[in-house]
Structures are given as C-alpha cells and as structure tokens.
Length: 267
Image (cartoon, rainbow, N blue to C red; front, side, top):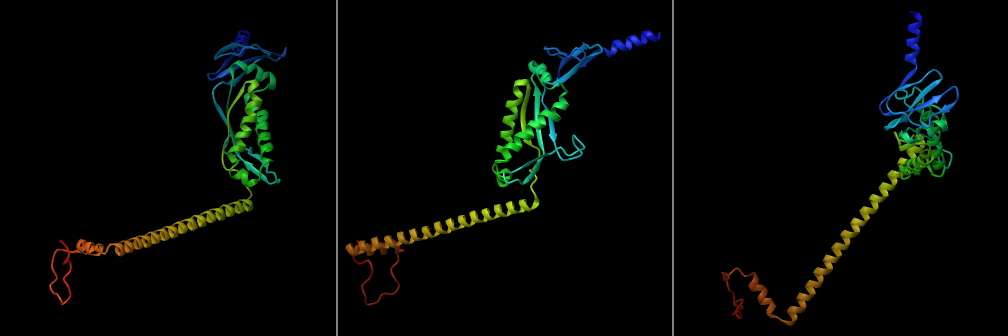
C-alpha cells in the first residue's frame, strides 16, 4: 500500500506544466543538457534530475523603484552621476518578452530563471547604459531637454545587447521624476524662472515696439493723407465746395448775413 502511494507520488512529481503565456525549456540537471526545442503550453514528463524553466512570451513589466510597497521591499532605484559627478537617482521600468524560438539560447547564456535574469543581467545592462550616457551630460540637461534622449539611448543599447539571445526589450522608461539634490533643484528652477521672465520681457518689448511702430505708421499715413488732400485743394479749389456739399443736410441756414450764401455756384 505504502509503496503504491509512493509510486503515485513519484509519478505525479515527474510531470511539469508550462503555463499559458510562457514557453518551456527542458534542462537535464544531471547530464547538464539543454533541449534546443522550446516547449509550448501543456504537461511534460520531467523525471528527477530534469527541470523545466518557463520564460514569458507575452509582455511583462518590471519597475526598479525606491518604494518599499511595490515589487521589492528594498530600494531598487538606479543611481548615476552627471558629468560633474553630481549624484542622481531615478525609478526605471522595463517591458519585455522572450522570443520563443530563441528561449533555449537565452537559458544557455544565463542558465537561470526569468526573475533572476531581470534582477541581474538586465538590471545591470540598463544601469550601465544610463550611467555611461549620463556621464556625458550636465544635471540641467539630464533634468531638462536630454531626459528623454538619455533613457532612449539606454533602451537602444540594451535592445541591441539582448536581441541576439532572444530577450526582446520593448521599452525602457522613467517610472517617475529624476531625483536631484534639493539645492541643485532650487537653482535649476530659479534659472528656468529667470529665463521665462527674460522671455516675457522680450515679448513685452517686442509688443511695445510693434505698437509704437504701428502708431508711427498710422501718424505718417494720416500726415501723408493730409498733405495729399491739401495739395489737391491747392490745385483744385472746387474740392472745398464738394466737401461742403457732402456734409450739407439739405437745409438752408436760418440766418444769413451780408456775406455770400454757400453753394451759390453749385448747379
């Protein structure tokens, strides 16, 4: 009876299941052999000494963060320096999946689980790429206009490094703000405020100049119009009578003095 139960237990333990969304790699821990063929979803015979590792073929995410309430109770955020040696920190995230046709190559390279690859080789590769590029930039560039370029450069380098072994890095991105020492942050914010104030002042000057030029142009235009009108009147006195007719309301004046009546000469 006992022998039968033991036999059933041994038989049950000799099978392993590859879960949906994963690909399996059969490894003989005794002989050290790795199957070159990936295993799809399902149950597989795995006698003692054989282990089936699972790698995800769908998109998975991981975030290295300083928060102790997320994926790890310890601070996993990335530390790096700018070109002047100023220490910075940031939370970084990655999305990835494994190419099922290259899963065995990935295992043969690192011979460990996916979680350990993420915690070790992948983290180190991303950190090194960020450190290398950040060392070429100043803190104002890292915190400002080169922030996106820095993480994109790291992503490209990591993608090129892992693609040949089947680990497809979809995206590497900042998972929060880059942490800058408060004193430096105050200086950066003050500089930005001064630059914005200067731009606003330049805009005000430009507006005032444009308004002044518009007023000068209008005055010059009015003066030229008056000169043209005066010249026309000098060369053609009848214009005065024409203007008077244009303004006349059709009624004769109620009082007439000894002088001539207006519009006498008008037909």
